[in-house]
Length: 175
View (cartoon, rainbow, N blue to C red):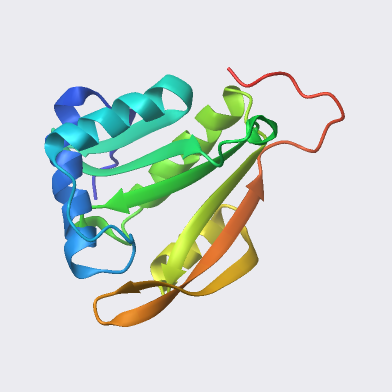
């Protein structure tokens, strides 16, 4: 299999990302959105993530095959060294290394920007996502029980956490 190119997402990637994400919205509990966002909305999300964190795409033979992004973990200022991450792949690419390539690049980027801790929220059950996060050193730090109702059933959400750097008493401001 050809290794994907990982690069910063641009507004041009919004349609491909919306198509990938739309699959997960429509047929899985991986996201708790109920209607796929428009291409314009995905474009806004790309810009917002790029402004403070990162939004990356995987591209193979000129086709976007997945994306990963970091975003704000919570609103309060003391949380500014923490962020939340997500990854979505073309369903045909699950298990082929694209998710790992995206996460490796994303975590490196977030660390370089001064973030200390990353969180992921994974709707359960999701063996593939749990395994991907475990490979990158994420640990389950909590479980929110029956917090989302989608596709005819209640879903738990695992809260996963990974430190990017050791704790320090006086952290520099994130970039």
